Length: 242
Image (cartoon, rainbow, N blue to C red; front, top):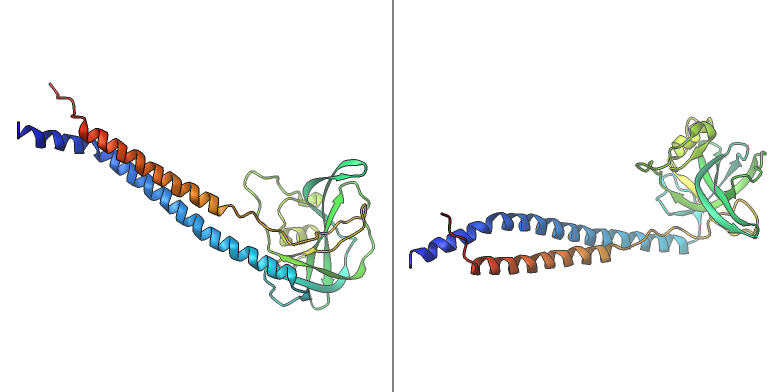
C-alpha cells in the first residue's frame, strides 16, 4: 500500500506535464502582451501630450526637418492647377449626405522642394480652381502613410490616393521631388465653403489600458483555472491499466 501511493502520485504528475507546459506558454503570451500594451500606453500618452502642446503653440516658420504634428506656416506658390484627391469621406450638408475626399495641391517654394498640402475636404464633384496663387498656409506636419493591407489601391493615373504618401502624390502630379511630409491645412471657413480644412490636430484613440487589463485578467483567469485543474487531478487517482 505504501509503495502504491508514490506510484499513483507520479502518475498524477505525469498527467500534469503537458497541461503545465501549455499553461506556461499561454501565461507567458498573455503577460507579454499585457506588458506590451502597458508600453504602448506610455508611448500613446506621450504622443497625445505632444499633440496637445503642438496644437496650443503658435505656428512657427517651417524648419528644415520638422517633426510630425508640429504646427507651422509656409509661403509659396499654391499650384491649384495640379490637384489630387485623398481618401473618401461622406459628410452631411444642407442638401443631404455628400461623398467627398481631401484636396491635395503642391506648394512650390523658391530654393526648396514643393510641399504636398492637404487643403481639406471637398465634394468629389465640386469644381476646382485652376490658377496658381501666392499663399501662406498654416497647418501641421504629417508623416507619410503606407498602403494598408487589403485597403483600397491608389490610382496614380487618376490622381486618386488612399494612402497619403507625398512621394507617390508628387510623382502623379509630375513632380520628381517633393518634401518627405505632408502639410495639413488648419483653419475655419464659412459653411458650404470648400475646401474645408481641418480645425484641430488628429488624436489617435488610446485604448491600451483596457487592452492591458484584459490580458492581465486573462492571465489571472488562466492561473485560477489551472490551479483548479491541478487540485482535481492530484485528488483523482488515475485509472489502473490492465
